[in-house]
Length: 109
Image (tube, rainbow, N blue to C red; front, side, top):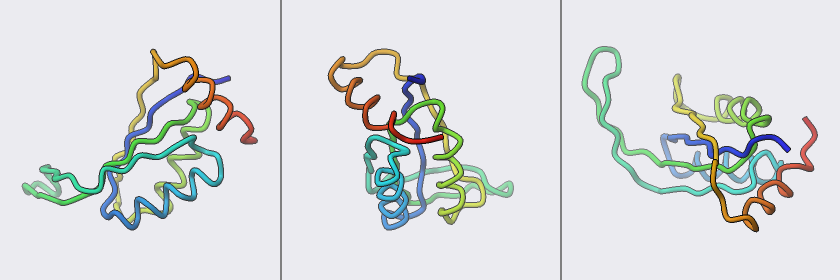
């Protein structure tokens, strides 16, 4: 089994986040998706200070599936440059780890 990861994505809307997350879970590209419906982001875009209300998404998957997950997000989100990052899950409840591995391991790459 590949290294387990948590993918972080910031979506422009809750509807977009739900739609993409449902697809990713149904296709077993991620074991689960957690959506924080509302965050406020402050950033520079085109040299100007900007503020947006967004949804924050946390996805549990494997490192080997990251590129496929990233591609699905990029093809189905409104942002030109979506935030899609990942961190390794270094410590985990053993039974949760087993569930994660089982859930995403049957996906054909």
